[in-house]
Length: 432
Image 1 (cartoon, rainbow, N blue to C red):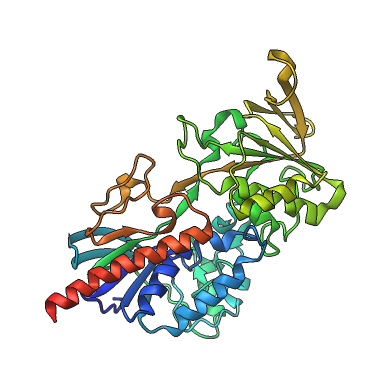
Image 2: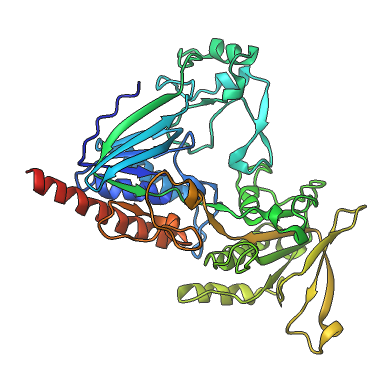
């Protein structure tokens, strides 16, 4: 059984993305005991899957590395990976939480040498790269993963490959007999920072994401640009591995739509503007970017970035809600169909059918955990995001509470940490 010492003066942070990491650090550096749990084998969340931030176009690895260093140095934080909350009972200041933790099959003795992966031949779809490539049955989730320990995929257990991985480990860090554990702990306050997931592009049937190879999502495009990603940092068409010369970016793919996500995710416009700079940076004048948009939501300092992108002669903007996408069966090129709302004329004069090599869908943010699956009494808005309930003892942080960019998610998580600290301080005041 995992040893976790927690009391009603402990803050439980659920989710190890940038918001959960921020909330945990803010609370821990104020002297509070924190248990941070993450359902995946390592911390980082969606931020770890980004190639660059906007508007400065710096790499997320920098900020992540600093925060991970702070976590390693802080003894007030107890980390549980591959763990999920099953049940929350109790009241503010006195919660009892049941957590289920899946086995990693690799102990803390792991040196991350990679011998286990080299001994294994079985491969599985790589979830970190959205299934765009495969990883070995023994793997390190990504290059900056923390904990810096390998994982044995549970589907490998009981096979010859699992035994081969164990025998290859010189540190004797692989334990194939590890079992799932159920942990019950106390907490005075809970911060729910489970983040977001990209909206299911396959649900937008007219766009053919599940039928056409050269229609991908904006997050898949981010992974494509990462030097450690599925294409080693090269922009390529999934159908044939060729360099695209014409890339279409479709805004509000499933967002601001009563049939899908009714809300605006706030970051999609900037994500696309950022991604056109990837095309310019790597392909220069050999490739053109076309942005199909309803309206561009870029304010304050972001507007300057927007203006710079519009000045690029290789980037064009078409004011249009794309109606549908079709495919040339022979070339796998894709055609976008719709009406150009800024084209002179009416009716059929505004219609277009434009060919592109690659289409990138700017899908919106959906809460990672649907509100009907949150194992606690939490009030959510119609879009499934957690609302602030004063005195509840359970607070949303980052994109669990609303669609936010990284900067605002960090600010939101800091606010959630302060609310949780106030609950803990009241408990200490009553008991002390």
